[in-house]
Image (cartoon, rainbow, N blue to C red; front, side, top):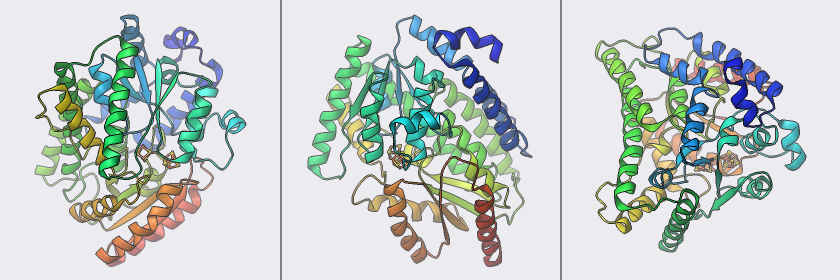
Length: 427
Ligand code: BJ8
């Protein structure tokens, strides 16, 4: 890919040697974790292709769109209502924040004891390593956790940043605030793109993003089958790709993958033998290329059948109601849908605990792994409530706290193997 796109990367101002190195490491990592899997679906070729072109073809598409007057908007959180971005004629991309990259640069401006996701996005920017970042006309941040909101104050010294105020509670007064924020965002997008968000445009964007969520809901419901028909690693990749691929193309391709999966399920076939312990992951999001934990889990004799996470069901569970007729009604539907997000940054956050138990039960999992990034207080603290609720439901839990480095892989593997062994004895 390197020589074909080098000119484009140069024009974007990337640090070419460091970026070449990143792609090399990513390719090796992908080969070890993904291409080594047995029994993958034919539809996985699409995943391999998208990943192999992650900094190539997709960036070329974005730059072509920009040349035709479109604006690219980069985001870090599923709280940013992307329907508005598409309705304003923009292109929404979820930015990479899943690699231990540009650490030294990031630690020049951030404390060492900062969550890996925040350090990663800062590292990608300061190290000039992410062509999505460099293609973005605007970065949208949000006041979720303290680390992120303070990091955006630093990030805005290096690129245009707009921050949305996210409520911390779900009372009526919070909804009022959030509605105002959604309207403020609408105005900011209209100023950026020069396009007015009309009822027709917003209605089309709501359907576009709902369709993408529906296909992911279909994929997740097929995973209820026993034996598990697809690996958790592949589904994580599908979820990750959903944040930056063209939504229509993605929906179509994942629809085809689901058709194939459905045939597999109908034939009673699986990607793993019947009796393989079924696990669910719950907690912090796993941004590209954070594949460490799923790889460790699935190379320890278990299979992942669900992800309670923003790069998982938290971003696909709820649709925007499509019955709004006027722009005001549609904004209300958007506001209501996003207020349902059960991020651990909310207090109280009972819905998340209920969702976890409901999801674990529905997927017939043998156990749950709660995943927190080091220094992520919202998820680490909330894991206490998760543990208690799962204990009550009789579902075993393993709590894992880690980062993006490979240093703890051995320790993680030992702990997860022991957990899987314990689950086998219970089956
Ligand atoms: S809606 S989960 S995407 S904020 S892991 S940076 S919380 S210290 S990412 Fe998130 Fe939006 Fe919530 Fe989802 Fe902070 Fe924790 Fe780091 Fe995190």
